[in-house]
Image 1 (cartoon, rainbow, N blue to C red):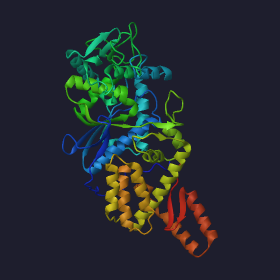
Image 2: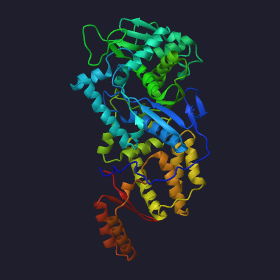
Image 3: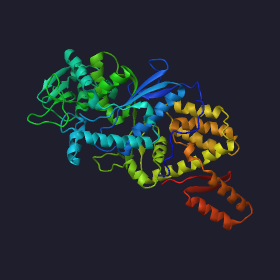
Image 4: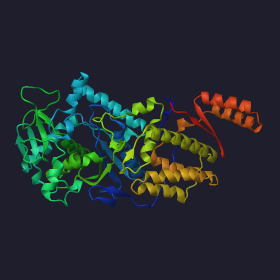
Length: 486
């Protein structure tokens, strides 16, 4: 795939320092808050990862591009970012509630292989996808829920000792009425308590043995007379952990509590993240995270992309049509992370064309600047925009305004490109995307032919260059060439 250049091998440069403060939209407070870390110089960042019973669709992938932009922004400021993205390979029941089959067991039966093989297959596909989207996974830990069973059991035991649990015929449940702050993330605290519980309960499958519909499973018992593919012994009997407890256990084990930032999609707010907060804070008496940040849905025809609706699109569908995977990243960046974004093949094609053109112009500027950058207010301004709640649309607009300014000094333009792309991650100056010497020689020969008005030769050279896998565009600042996607 010719578009898959080295996404992380951009030209080295010193991070641009700016005095602009960091502001993020904090779901917990319901407003934009000034961000400072708990520990000077270090940020702990936990992101809810995939349930690996099937492939992540592009709606799922938006949350990881958002988290990557967040991490890049924090790193650019100078923080050491400690990141975790969990892999859910057990315990996530159908409908995100406490009834039905485990999604992993269901997936294994459907494909006729073991749950472990299902997890391995779709974990690899997930890792491949996020790397293609420009996410550097080398500094992220990806723990599996099945690797932290003891830690999950320990938290449930602590909750039991403190009186937050009760037993039913199918498991151990968290008693939400024992936790007065339940639902605070969903900003239901201003409603009457029973209305808030009813609202959350309507989203969760019913269980007549629950004391309240919003109560959730911490440990599920294996059905009598059967043996699951994935089950463990526990103080309460053989079974498996509920979905929510894994994140509390892994976040605490790997990053400590409280976290600086916890991220996910907005669909996690009313149930999964609300339950994480309840069990973690009830067990340990301190906040789970200071900042909660959520990405909005990716939609098609005004409804969110969903496997259940049958309109899921995968990154492989995009690349098979000849689009660069980074075109999807570019499309994501055209909207604020907390704003819904509509996907269409037409919008992706436009994003792909825009990214191709931006890359061509950026590399031409880099060549003309001969690698020399000139920092200016513009390069500091593009960083300041991204520090202001990750304003990627504004940063892209400023980047385009900069590269199209024919009167601007090339070194100043290059500084803006480098500063923006260090966070946007579009690979605009990736070394392997550079044009080889023999293509440059053909371009010089073509320029001579054009100056001599030998248009027959000029056209022939253009066709030869494009047949070699490159796109040629004649603009007011000269000829721009770059690799073609696909």
